[in-house]
Picture (cartoon, helix red, strand yellow):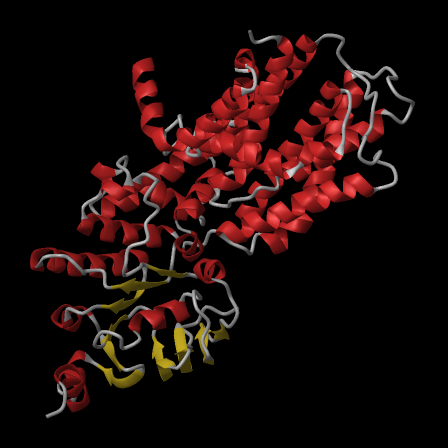
Length: 260
Length: 287
């Protein structure tokens, strides 16, 4: 294994298609995501954005086409395997562990951190206690980064909407990803919160050496945040490029505003 | 009113409640507990009557049988769990009911398990029921401590996460199949070990010990007691085992009353008797 700057993209989609019965949710979508970039995914409702995230995270299999992770095909890998490879996601419709506390939501996801085996845990050995306090420290640190530290011991279900969205990000970050898929992280936030989130994501990318793929309906936010954007419409990739290129693309304007 | 004999049965009920609770704590509705309970009991009955009925038996051989039962039920649970745990919700429940039936019919028809009459004269390691109270009580205490520790461990947290949202758990890198299987195997081992004690205590063992009825009764322990903490099934198991005996003075009405309790329990205590807010209040009260 050489660690020279490899020409391989972090993520590569080749001719990805997905049907649901008669519905063509995605058809022959191909693009690459380079290490370290912030990549935006936009498109009207029902364009197939979330389906694409489900395919990438292994929640649903592709009907055809392949996805490559650092040059290796990911076909048939379960969501938990993909997560351990370094691919984490959040959910558009928030899927927190609502019965657990905010802190526990993050603790559960810290699987890269040594936690001691079950026997250590049952016997409550000093070794286990030390690992536990390190674990809590790490979790609190992540919560601190996302501005949730003061709510660590509340139940996740009781959080305000914007806080729940940020907890989803904290939980995904806890899995130690190199690629983070964010499904509408700013949904339901006011403009001020959106702006703060934008800054936060840029910071997180720096600090955690992340590559980000972001689905967002609020296009100005993405234009500001992303280096490159892909536009989906009815399951097809209709444009791919820098924010400037996308803004001027007639097909994108047509998809959003309809043709005259 | 509660003599030592009833106390033993109550403790065994609590242990079986914990066995049903384990997969449920990982979001799996498994009713397989009676199957493993029957396997443990049958194993103890067969092994301990090798030297003839009512031959003297030491506590050490009972412990040996428990170890043997643990191994056998763990192996069986691994074998059955891998395919069965792919099912969800009510489908898993139905598959595990089928397992209970398979084990029951097998024990009924195997040439060496005594048919419908079962196996008699299982030797007693204790002369008095009080010995069984201490022995099963010690096991329950150890279990309570282990369950308490489990909640603080990675495995316990993963189980709670899977119960809340299995898909999200998988996307957070939790090895859900392994966690669910671990809970299922642990549940089987607990039921098997409980079966060993029950066989010696009851002195006789037959296929009816692990019937579908037991699956429903033990499930009621968890539902009435509460499925959010290990204390729930313990309380549920103790109370619901004692109730029919305590109601004995009312004669034939007692089964009706018992049914009413099971029916009305969920109406008045939808989350069971032991709920997280209650535990929190108790914790605060202790300080």
